Image (cartoon, rainbow, N blue to C red; front, side):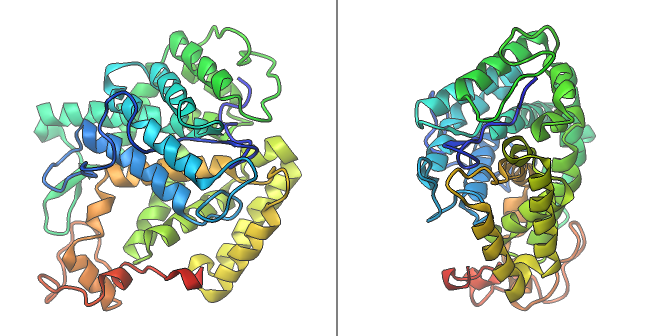
Length: 396
């Protein structure tokens, strides 16, 4: 399969990127009035999964990641607003992910995005979020019917909230193994509809032809050259093994969502060259971009003034008239990591008054499930905006 994740010609390339969020198409709940996931629920409902997916897209698009489109950083034919529109558009298709095969959800999400944007903004994200959403919904239904078997994330007060990474990944593996040739056919149609740049031709199971293998099988064929396909082939190893842990660590350390997302992006990029960059600019350039990410992290990344300067310099180096060195696949993986974190209750786990109070005092957060230190309960942070480690715009 040629270039499963090549959805980016713009954001990633020329008016090409991944997936988004906004008012839902097809009558599904949008962002307004939907919990992410509600602390009163032990596992997320369909509305929560949809909101988490949309919020993941919004958080990823809004963070000032080097080389990508973000607020105030547009490409000639691709703007930040396009990412917001696409994020909104995928809500409806993802809301029904439990009731239809993965391929159909991918195809419907890409078709919905096309009604809101002119560019391929989110193909890679849709390819990642569709099986994750289905896995989350099926795992939620299973644990609701069999509470004793549930594997959930502990909360600071000893209760639980959200899906654990272990439980979600186990469900995801079953979803991927159950994909069919029809799923591959729908995904091929979605890729052709999105028309990502730099696809080229594959010797076997090319997207221009009719597939004769299951979706998981064709992804395995492309895993050596495509980061999204590699996720399918490895049960989302980069997402669960690198991205989600990096994001969890950053949030636990008190970083704002913007900073935590940028750090997660850099961590993923440092760990493996971006296959979108490799496809558009060659493997040498992709390796150089990955090395730049490692150098930025060595300077402290978002956690130091020197690191922030290095991020700005890296951003300038990655931008040119054609935007062919933008790490689009890494941005997709970042969105998937955010989605996993939100499904695990990450939005509320690090936002309780007690935990904000600890952050406001510069105290480290205890491990999930561990008791809070004496005096933490009931204490309100004096400045909630700074308590979560946010930096004002002047520092960016």
